[in-house]
Length: 78
Image (tube, rainbow, N blue to C red; front, side, top):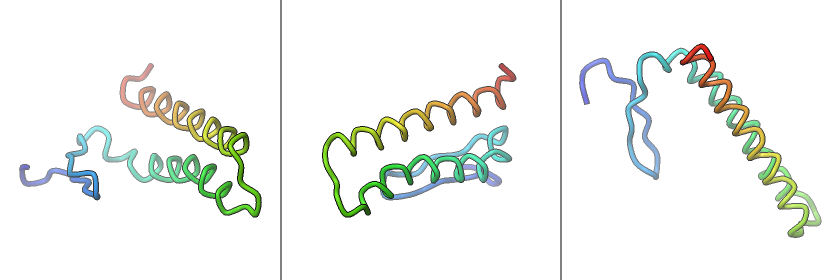
């Protein structure tokens, strides 16, 4: 850890966030929360079953892949 490093820590550990990514953190977090909400909102429904959970999880995974693609395009310009 060096002065000026951007750190992220949670129950899974601590990591540094590269300076080139720092401006994208807020939008990336918002996108991640939207993806995660697919599963969390489903689990709040009155009827939960495996097929429904699988559908919610698949949508979350699809959105996470889109976030990865977006982030790579911002960082690598691809």
